[in-house]
Every structure is written in C-alpha cells, then in structure tokens.
Image (tube, helix red, strand yellow):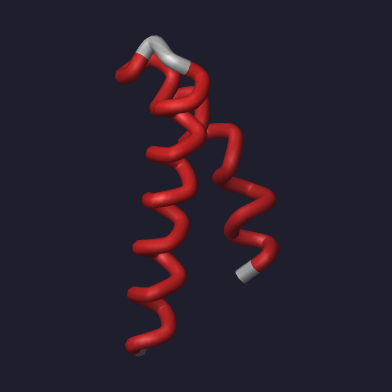
Length: 44
C-alpha cells in the first residue's frame, strides 16, 4: 500500500490542485481519495 501512495500521491495532488485552485482543498481531496482506495483494498 505504501508503494501505491508513493507512486500516485503527487499525480493525484496536482490533479486536485488543477480542479480546486486551493492548496488546502487539494490536500483534503487527495487524502479522501487515498482513504477510499485503502478502504476498497481492505474489502477485497
């Protein structure tokens, strides 16, 4: 799981910055996305 975070964090973060135009909102969105991903993998 850590590798997924390391590989995709900045890609998702920069995408979120483009969508929100706000650093704090982009960080919140990025964290929410990773939380959903990790919850999904926990169910598999």
